[in-house]
Image (cartoon, rainbow, N blue to C red; front, side, top):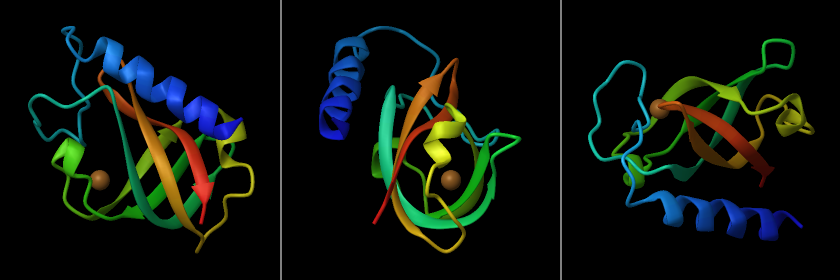
Length: 109
Ligand SMILES: [Cu+2]
């Protein structure tokens, strides 16, 4: 089921790749021509289910031209945080929600 979802996300990203839409913003930094979705790996540093946020020390994300860094993300829904606890190594998927990166999937490694 999860791999089907991944394919759906990628297909959606590809189908919208040619359209003009707000690019993923990165904490106020200006990154041109960023895609509608991207994935990265990292370590969970904090989880706030109530606020719907997660802090991830992530590696470089070449698709977004992001260097490695620790940053706070919003999650698409609280369900994304199921099983996600501090110290876990994760693979995560970001999607572009009105120009802001939102974590749509977290897979504990
Ligand atoms: Cu970052």
